[in-house]
Each structure stands twice: as structure tokens, then as C-alpha cells.
Length: 447
Image (cartoon, rainbow, N blue to C red; front, side, top):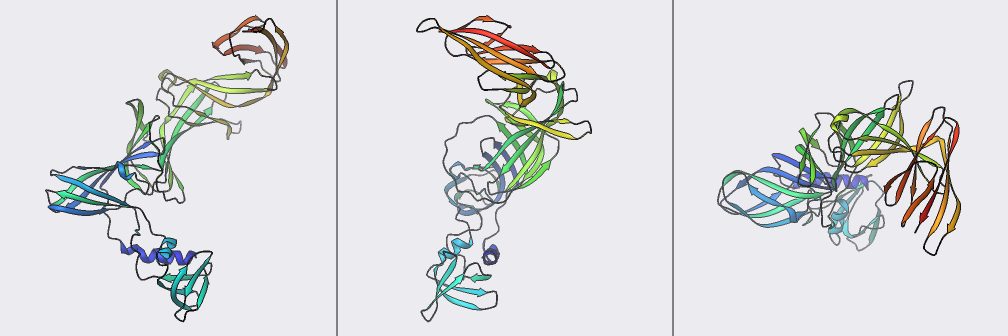
């Protein structure tokens, strides 16, 4: 079957006329599986009514979004547009030839000519000239010959246009359209210093193109932000992916409407069915705060490890950071870089904090218990809580205990100082000496 399919496709490639290719391409990619394509094409016009077939457009194009504009002087009006996307495949060709005569050549040279009745269930069913039926196993090596490409099938997605022109000759026009199945996301690597007081942050943009088109030497822009879209299904063609990494120069960032726009300082080629990585910014070293955080809840013993830094110019950063995955590493004493954990961050404006949950501390354990409950009235009760923190490390640590409270509440007694973070959260910074246990107790009155 594989040999038969390859023979069919190879035999049909020369049927389609040469496409009108883009002279210049600009691509704006959104982080919502969407891109806006701008192309400048040289078109050959005659005065009056023109019919054109534009190939080399994305298979996932939204044909309702196509915009046509003349670049060269002259008046040209787009009257009609048809989008053809019924692409050639061996199965579609065979379905089109049901009830018609085909030739089947087996690997050993045997030739069968007959009327194709079925191409399902792993067999080709032929009615031979004498009226008998022959079943040919599709798994066997063979080739199938058909007289021509069935009507309605095309090799590549095609826009068919009718235009009214007041000019003639070769003129430049700009074509723009939206396409699905191409998107981007940011990925970061945060390498901790040996003393764990700073990290080196590098950022990469990963573009995933499954739109059914290669964008050669394109001007690339990325938009970070959540745009409003009306969702509807689009026809797609899928294939294998390959990975390619590109180096600096990276992106220049600026505010754009209520979003942020990142423009690559050079052209790049984004091939179909490719994942491409491009450097977002030069690596920057920034000071950090390492936080041990325990969520006080019965049954929870894990103490999380959080790395926190401010995205500011004074910390050698300050570019708005697009949402993405951030991986944390640290060099071992032998120099090898080891993976510590990963987290995701939201779109982060400049001068805002970034927190990365790296994992859970191995040598620090928390334990929470309700020591007593006192119902003062039908609407008021008091809970006395106890939190034990055990530090089995060889150095002292401070663990931030977080406790969530719902309702109208008041802390009536506490063994340690606390901070009210919001209406439902309080935090207790608890110092714990090396290889010791520290106990926090507090009473909360809830209305």
C-alpha cells in the first residue's frame, strides 16, 4: 500500500500549474494557535475580468479573513473568491474512481484491469472484463494506474479569484489572512548560582507550525496577550515535526494596544511541520530569594521550595515576560548542570515578582493538627491549631507557614507573629534552627 501511494502522488505532481509565490512574507504569531500572514505577490493582470489561482497559502487558512490590497498604482477589485482544499491523497483518488476502470500492477509484473468496486477493508475489489470479481490485498506491493487526476482534487490549497482590473501587466499586491495551527510559547532556563543567591535567566521562544505552509525568510513578530476570538473548526493537514534552534539577535519588545509585541531583529524561515526555537533575550543574572513555604493543612507534610525574583531593570531584567514554562537547574561540584524542577509563569509585566515552585524540601517536614474546637454560639466558633516544623538540615531555615481561613475571622492568640495577606490568607514566618523542631500554635475565631 505504501509503494502504491508513493507512485500515485509522484505521478500527479506535474499536473498543477506553477504557483504564484510570495515575494515578501511577514508573519505575526499569537500565543493562541493563530497567525496573521502578510504577503506581497507580483500578479500578472489584464484589463477587464481576471481569473487567478493562488497557491502556496496555508492549509489552515481562514478564507473569510483574506484581505487584498494593491501596492502598485492601479484600481483592481476582488469580485469572487473560492477556497479549494480537497487535497490529493491515494484514498481520495481511489474513491473518485469507484465504478471506473483502473489498472493494477503487482510486484511480480501481473496486470489486472477492471472496474473498481471497492477500496475498503484492506482490499481492492475489481470486476474483471469477464464479469468475475478479483480481490487484491492492499498490503501487497503494487501500483495503481488511473487515466487522470479526478475533478475537484488539487495538490495544494488554492485560492481561486475573480478580479476586475483597470491595469495590465505585472503589478505588486498585498495579501493578508489569518491561519490556525501555528502558535508560540516561551520557555525559560533559570540556572542557580552555587550559593543560591542569584540565577542566570535565559528565554527562548518555541514556534510550532502545523499550518500547512512554509514561511521563507519571513519578518517575524509575536504578540503576547489574550485576544478575543470566535472559535470555529478549520480543515488541517498534519505531519511530522522537526526541531531547529536559532541564535541571537533576539527580539525587541514594545507595548501594543493592551498586549506586548516582540519583533525579531532579522528574518527567519519557519518550515511547515517544524518546531523552531529562537532566543528571546540575552542571558541575565538577577538576585533571588529562596523561600520555604508550608501550606498548613491536616495531612500535608510537604514543605515547598520557591525561588522568587523581581522582573526589574535594577535586577538586569525588565522586559515583559510572556507566559511559559521555566526550568530550574544548578551546577554540581563536578561542573555538570542538574535539573531541579520546573513551573509555569503567567504573562509578567516589568517590575512584578516572579515565583517558581521548584519542588519540595527533602529535609524539612511540616505537620498540622486541630488541637481543640470551641463553639461559642451558633454562628461563632474558635479553633486552636498546632503546626510542627522539623528541620533536619545542618543549617537554620525560615519556613513561611500559610493558613487559609474562610468567613469573618480574628486571630485571638498566636505564639508567633503573622501577616494578613488578604481576607482569606495569613502567613507566619517561622525560624527553625538546624536539626530541631519548632511549634506554632494559634487560635482563630470564625464568625
